[in-house]
Image (tube, rainbow, N blue to C red; front, side, top):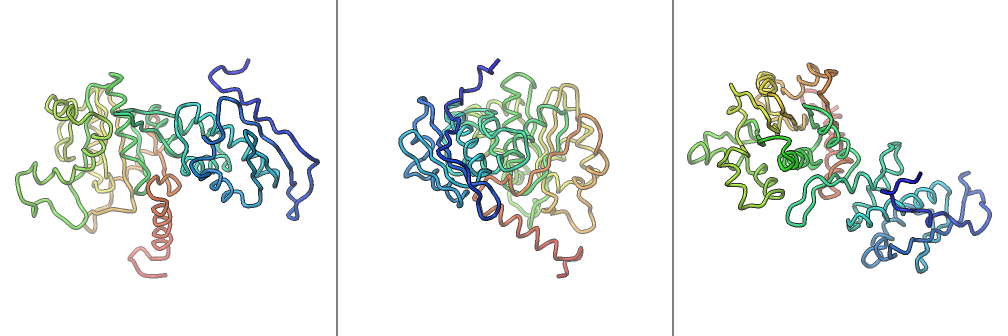
Length: 353
């Protein structure tokens, strides 16, 4: 029985125009015509000024892609033609789900189809987490989809990865969704009070004035997901709490979605203290990047230690995000990789090798 939740993609069956030939590198060259279903207009897949078509052409330079009406005519290596065939089916499903396409979505879909994962791009890119004011938060990469799935499946999840991979943002979206679904009674967001290049004691004002700038990224993410006028009310009622990690000592956090951000700046003792705050009906997500530790010299990162201590325990999951999951400017991923190579060339004391 066909799955009624899936669109009928039978109209995408290829219609070979002529017999396959052999390419110089040994890959079979094929010609194929793909007819789009009537429910999808070609412009939805081509993008403004054919931007998305140009993206496909850049990704498959050995394949000729011609569009005539509602037909895509492909001529090139069989492997490339097969991926483009499947890509069009995935893009059609994304469009039918009401999500507009862009260059980033097309490039990420191609990357998934070229990989070995069984996850379908349409399943990844249409997995809505939370919506607010017409904006929907959803994973944009396969690694992000596996990360949010791990949060659903486990009580404690560690999100590890470089800047820009959405570790904290997606965790907060899951927290807001859990609160809206009444799975938890409150959200608690916390960070260790260790900064790069500053100390809180040198900042002017009261304690709240000192910690507010440091916690500002968490507030900014909240404003993306919850109406701004609701946040002061929810915080006053204790439904949402944003506080430094030191404020967690001595507490038991029941029926809460708890997020520890910038966890690479915890000491092993602080990490143990935080994790043992876990109460009944709660979920914890710990995020951090072990390549950006700001602790004073001689203190080992609690995020590095906890992997060795807790790895293999049931209901605790370590999710690894990489430069491929960076969803900021495309250069950020390349910058992350470049610094990784640079650090690999340096010894443990910073000398060039």
